Length: 156
Image 1 (tube, rainbow, N blue to C red):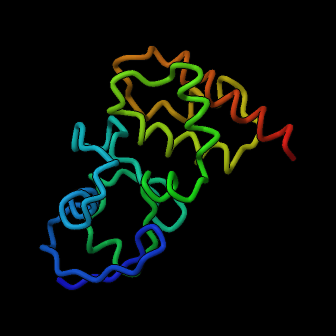
Image 2 (tube, one colour):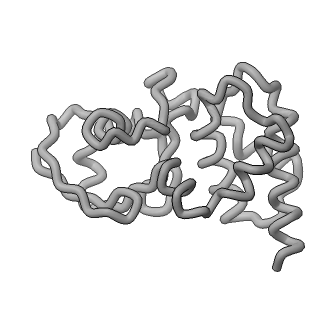
């Protein structure tokens, strides 16, 4: 099937098999490997991306379902500078170790901060609860998101 979508601001047209998952299309056809494949059941959050402004699990969305849509990956958010402060906070708070979950965790955290500029620690925990991390124990991740929210609030 022929699809056309906008990925990180660029129009992309490609032929894909109807069963191709969006994250596989991004990784294999566009070489955007920042979104990871973890469980492939939508549980771990490693494949989190934005589709038409909402975060989704790339392993649960078929590429043909994104036809005509706008896709933003971790590469797009990073290259645009949208999450530079969040990335810096993750580094400063040691909120990443192996890095496998980090792209999805950053996507989820940014989504929260876009919709709730001053989340409580409990709201942060709730919003990232669909993203698994086996290394950090989550405390440092919550600290990094909270730090970023406070810094953004002061900057306004």
